[in-house]
Image (tube, rainbow, N blue to C red; front, side, top):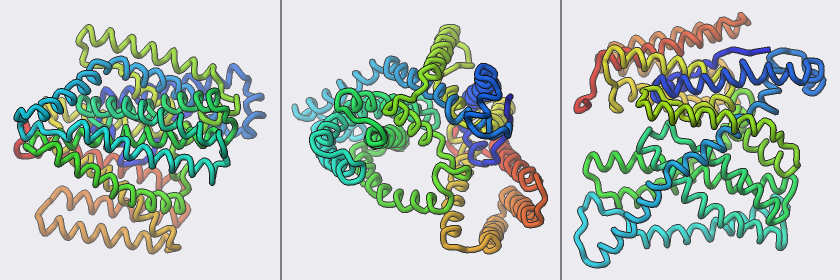
Length: 491
């Protein structure tokens, strides 16, 4: 039993274009390993009738998703665990070098030596002081959540808080260092944030279970809180590195950027919670509309560790897969091959539904075609910029639609709002004499209208076909922009 399908996300196609064919192929390979090999192998090994009895469905698609959700995703987690550890091993020298550089700069300033304005970072003493200043209230907040909402009280809550604070400090530092370094090398789109988070999750769960004595849902909840902090730290670190790189190019002062990054993080914290609550009310985080596969995977792992139900065989298979791809990557590196096999994209492909890997692969193929026609694609290429715009546009549209859904506005009015926005943009593009955006927006309006009409008429499969055409049209738009235009100042 194997399953194949495709998501209709324009944003995922754009992600494939940004990361390129190499990464897109590896994500698809991970999906193929999960859905074409591991799921059929698991069902054959367990026996079809036993699997049907276990998961309570004989629908092939539902059965495949049930097996993937309960078992195969753990293979991806094992692969990510090894990938995260390998990232730390590979980056140990840059991490140590960065620490020494920060200490050296602090000593130079203390000795009165002049430092170039463009090399003037926030002093290490300030950084350490701010770190400690935020760890204390974070630990207090963690203790409060455990005591009031999770049900962990007394000495156990204090012990859990101490362990959590230590893990957040040490692993947060390592995670941020890895994420920031890799963002500078391969871009934030290839950052192993999920792998680092899963590694943290497992480490924290084991410490809380065996050192503190937590168990059950209380232990899982306490673990997720720590993993959330580490995940946020790693993601923000990659973003900050990209910002600092941009600042270096334009001659900005690093310490001023770093100060504003702190302000920006505070501002985002006040915006994120309402947006996430709105999305949850509209779609339900973890539902088919908003599956949140990473969150579900991490919840399964933490619960499995504390309840003793984690299938370690799946983890072991993931570890073996990771080792194979790491060895292949090292061999390819020695041979100076253009195609590489970093393990994290494969792990992502294993724990994501196969349908999400397909548009990523299509986007990667479009990037490859552009590179063949242009010979080289820079990071400021119009195709890359427009692909980033597609990602942002889909995200903003999803949030806007969620707002309309929870306000009890009918589908008809949501569609009409979309039509008005599309007409507005067509008018703006026409005034600016932007021919291609005008044509593409008009095409999207027509395709959207046909999909809406087909949905209302109850015509099966036609809305999905039109959605797939829309995704392909968006990537064609990216392709044409990349081929025909060049951003001034790019090489």
